[in-house]
Amino acid sequence: MNLRKIAYTRPFRTFIAGFFKENAVTYQLLGLCSTLAVSNKMENAIAMGLGVVFVVTISSALISLLRKWIPPQYRMITYMIVTSTFVILVDQFLKASFPLISSQLGPYVGLIITNCIVMGRQEAFAIKNGAWLSFLDGLGSSLSYLYTLVILAFIREILGFGTLMGVRVLPESFPPWVVITMAQGAWFLLAIYYWIFRRVAKLKPVEQE
Amino acid sequence: MNLKRKLLDVLFIVVLGTVSVALLLAAQSYSAPAVKRFQETRLKTNILTAAGIPWTPADFRDVFEQRVTEQTKDGAAWFVADSLVIYEFKGRGLWGMIEGIATFDSAINTIISVRVLSQEETPGLGDRIADPEYLVTYRGKTAAAPLDLAMRHKAEAENEVDAISGATLSSQALLKIVSEAAARLRAVVKGGTS
Amino acid sequence: MTLNPLIILVAAVFTHNIALTYLIGMCPMLAMSRRIDTAVGMGVAVTFVLAIIGPLNWLIYRFLLVPTHSEVMSFLVFIIVIASAVQLVEMLVSRFFPALHSSFGVFLPLITVNCAVLAVSLFVMLREYSLWQTVTFSIGTGIGWGLATTIIAGIRERLALIGDVPADLRGAGITMVIAGILALAFIGFSGMVAIQ
Image (cartoon, rainbow over all chains, first blue to last red):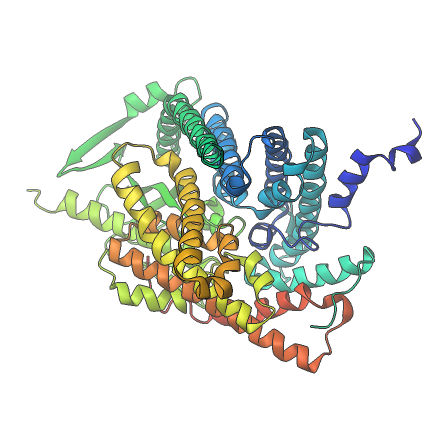
């Protein structure tokens, strides 16, 4: 397979746009509430990130399939109905068949439904593109959310709890940075991440206000 | 034409809404028995563990039947196993309900243990109220007086428990629920008995 | 619940500020805090919509969802009500108050996606507020959110005058730092009043 050729195909470019330069959190500025709250431990970051990937990809595909029938002035309502029904259905299924997982994911369900990334991608892409491309677009953006969460969680868990994935990595004598485990303190870490990200992705700086 | 278009649009939303509602109600009734069974299992196995009674997934129901009795009085219900009294508590946390069981000695003077069965607090912070390592702070505390959070020092007195750094509100919520449950149980069990 | 609704109002604005204490409604807060007039406009619009939607969702929950044991639908129903109510409000405002519509109208569709609006309904449900408590809580939350956004806008406008923000931190980056400092400051309020 000629890898260089794939890089020029539409599906790949759709995927990579959301995955890298148009990072959901630092470029599109979506999903901030949950990023701050949930990225304090690797375990939570991975769970939430995977949940969002699952929901964004499939919801985008669903909206894309329905796009010919959605009345323009009812777009928002449609996104919300489709997304929340889908998520609650999955939640009910988990409750019935995998109750232990369901009880651990309980707090995330609400956070995922209201995650702006879902609606953001539906409105920006899925409403005007085919299902496969919408799926990839959702995949790119939601994976960018996932790796953002994981990177932040790596730092927050080590500095804030001294552990990584629950395993202690710093000595007990290291004073935990409690502030960074709270959403309030996470703002600063997010700002630094934003800063570094824009540098690395060579994004043009916003003009002086 | 314009009116027809508008009506079709509204119809789309109505149909979409109805389909969603139907799917959700169907899903709820599908999951309801399994949810109930899970909650019953969770409660019983936790009560057995709290009472120190060994169980296996195969026999816990029988063990529960044999070793645990439920008592009621004045609208309150609690469980008795050996010489321990186990009481379910439920209350409001920061983001959702907190449910659990508290185990007391037979005179309901001391808290033997607290186990949290379900909660929806902040992941990583508030959700540590369900952590057995945190709940150790409730062991041996008094059930005869209201409890307080020990701020800025380690909890020493028998009416003090530690708080979770960065999760004061969730710690406070659990404390209030447990404290009030203990008071309620004491009042029912002790008040008015001969 | 015997909490005085007025205490809930003040608490929702200051000590339990939905944006700076609970960190809900962040995306629009970052987006709308560039200038003070935008922030104030959005704040007013959010408060107005919340004043209607908070009690409306309370009524629907109390008289429709609970009696029919369909609490699983709460999320979905609240979301539909919010989206529909916002659209309705926008239509009414553009028809009967065109002057108002030209200044605040553009903000209305953005309120649908402001998590703070949904959060109010969910909190009201969880805390089992009465109708009056819901009314003051909704209005207080709207004012609180608007206040937070306006404070940040004020600081950003000042910063723009000084003009020394590092290039890659401009825009959302420095706003995050500002929001962090404010959020940390608001921790000082915690424990003052209990509204749940």
